[in-house]
Image 1 (tube, rainbow, N blue to C red):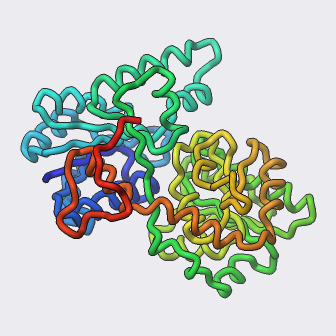
Image 2: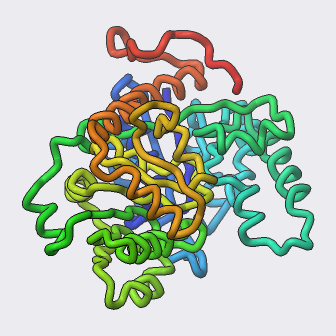
Image 3: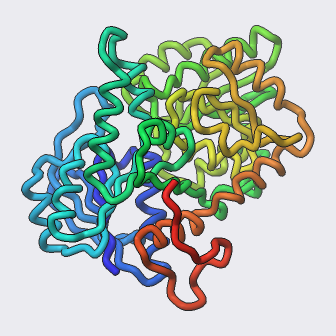
Length: 389
C-alpha cells in the first residue's frame, strides 16, 4: 500500500514533526508498505531516504517562526498528489493543509489529519480576551473534523477540545519513542562532568525556543534553585525565534546554549547524563523530547497544564517525574522533590517502555485498514478494529 504524508513546518532544525515523519516511514516500510512524505523546501527535490521517498516543494518562510516553512503552491501540491495516486493520505498541519481533505475525498482516498497543537490553548495564549475565542476554536475544530475521515489526537489533552464538541471521528493514537537510541546506557560520567563544569546538579532543556513553549521558564527555574542553595547548571538544546533573548537572559548564569544538535546520539547522551529534564511548555500536546528524556532514564518536570503528565505515571509511588505550575518557583520545588529519589532512573525508563513506536505504527495501520505482513506484525497490540476515541 502507498501511504503519503504531507506536512508543513518540517525542516533541518525541526524536532517533533520531523521525528514523527521519520518514525512513521521506518515503521510502514518495515511492514512492507511504501511511504512518501511531502515537505516544504527551497526547491523541488526528490530524494530516497531511509524513511521513504522525500519530496520537497518550493515554500515560503513563515515570518517570526525562526525559519519554519510552508509549501508555496496548492496547485503544485495537488498535481503532485494526482501523479502519486496514494492509497492513503495523512496530513500534519491543521491550519494550511485542510484543503487536502476535500481533495482526497473527491478522489475516494481515505484521509486523516493529525492534531499536533491545542488550538484552544493557542487561542487563549495569543488572542485578546474580547474575542470569542471558544466559539472560534469550536468552529474551526468542527470544520476540521468534517473535512477528514479521522482526526488523530496523541493524548487526552489534545483530544479534549474535540471531545467537548462531540467529534465522532476522533481517534487517540499516542506517538512513540526510540527506545533503542534513547536509553539509560548512554549516560556518560565524562560528558556529565564536562557539562557540569564544576556544578553539582545538571538540568537540561531540549526543545524549540519559541514563545508558546515558554523556554525562559527553565532559566527562571535555575535562578530559583541557586537562590535555594542548589548548585545547578542548565544546558539548553534547540533553536528558535527566542534564541537571542534567552542568551541575554542567561548572561552571568551557569547556562550553556548549545543550539540545534542534528546528531541524535549526542542529544541522547546529554539527556541521559542529566539529573532532570525540563519541559515548561504549557501547551504541549505530547512533547517527544520529554518522552526521550524518560526513555534515557532522566525524570522530567513539566507544566501542569500540558499533556506531559499523562505519561509520567504521576499516580505511582515512584513516578517518572513531576508537574508544576507555570512559575520558576514551582518548577524549582518540583526539581528538588526529584533529586536523590531512589530508583527514579529505572522507573522513568519503564514509563517510556509503554510507548514504543511499533505500537504507534500498528495503531496507524489499523486505522488505515491494513495489517503487518506475516510474522512481522507487532504482537504487543491485539489485532482488532481501532475504536473511535
